[in-house]
Amino acid sequence: MTSPTDITRDPFRLVVLDMAGTTVADGGLVEQAFSAAAQRLGVRPGSDEHARQLAYVRATMGESKISVFRHLFAGGDAGDGQGGEGAEDGEAKAQRANIAFEEAYGELVDGGRIAPLPGAREAVERLASEGRTVVLTTGFARPTQDAILAALGWQDLVPLTLCPADAGGRGRPFPDMVLAAFLRTGAVDDVRRTAVAGDTSYDMLSGVRSGAGIVAGVLTGAHDKDQLTRHGATHVLGSVAELPDLIARAEAAGLPDLTAPAEAAGLPAAAARAEA
Image (tube, one colour):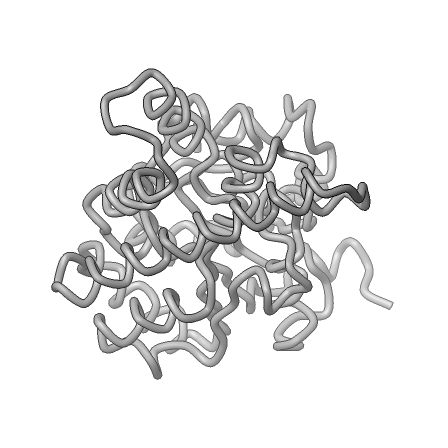
């Protein structure tokens, strides 16, 4: 059994990275694809309903997209075990919106509207060269994730990529994708030796709930430093390019407070370290 002393010496061998907004610059494509999908379901651009729904999309960046559409088009209670014709109709509408979103996003990707964030590929390659296993995760469905990887030429960049369906269907803010990476790679014996990085509050919650020792927010995407810190970021970085150095510093320092993320939702201890 690993002792607390051993934990402080062991390296962070597993690194779980978000894609859009963290390693990939999508230039607002999520909002554009959402607007296209909503319009197909009769939501007029510029209407109050569209503005309300877009605000929700922005607030829940990082969440599984089908979960977002269930909230918007199925009353947020689809899949809760309640039957009835209305619930089925709502679920069908949410699925139709999700398909429309994925199609619209895929068309934008195919049109060359996506690019890696500066230094992202280099950071992944450095982490791998240091003996770390890097996993890329997303709230998109598998076909969209694969389209992004193909557009960037990243199909072979990392040994494992995960979408919500690969982890049982639940996306962020649940910890399932981080824990699936932990279980499927076998890269570390203790989940606290995992580093998670993302650009949204849901990325932070997912990392905290998984028990990861480093939960790093990056300022290249949807949410700002305050949002990231309030949702559990142990550190806030300008970009993912800074992550390899952060991990190296954390290992050198021994991170005596590795258990702080387990304090989770109240977050005073974890949030305090976001200044680092």
